[in-house]
Length: 136
Image (cartoon, rainbow, N blue to C red; front, side, top):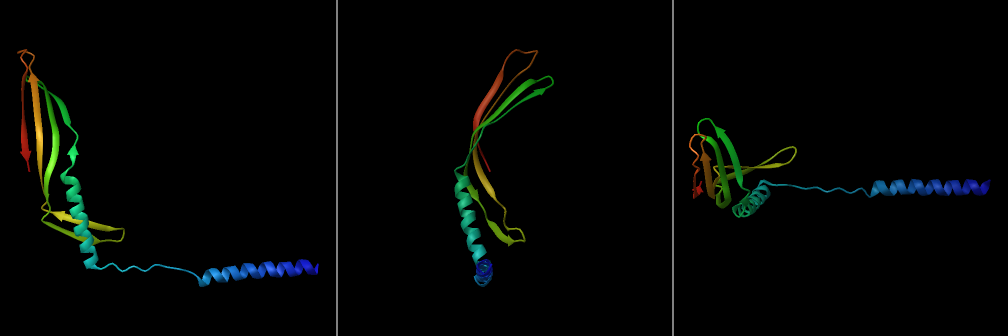
């Protein structure tokens, strides 16, 4: 019985000591975000986004529309790619759930190949055209 009591005290003292050890070694991280740091990160992220988007190729856009009298019109925009993006103004806004980067006056130059064709039910001739466009 005495041996059981000694082991019980020894085990309970170890458990208590472990709990106290945990309380004394609590850790935390403190972080201070300044407006200068936010502005630096904003410029870095905006420039990275511009370089990523400038070489972005978009998928083709195809649509067929039935128009009375005209008939079916088939339209395609292909080889859509951006080659210049300009962000004249941007600012960063910290919030409760994250950080927002707001850009205004953004322009983008695109190059697009376009194509359309149509035919009517009363004239069995197919009409079509195609070209390349530069869009801002």
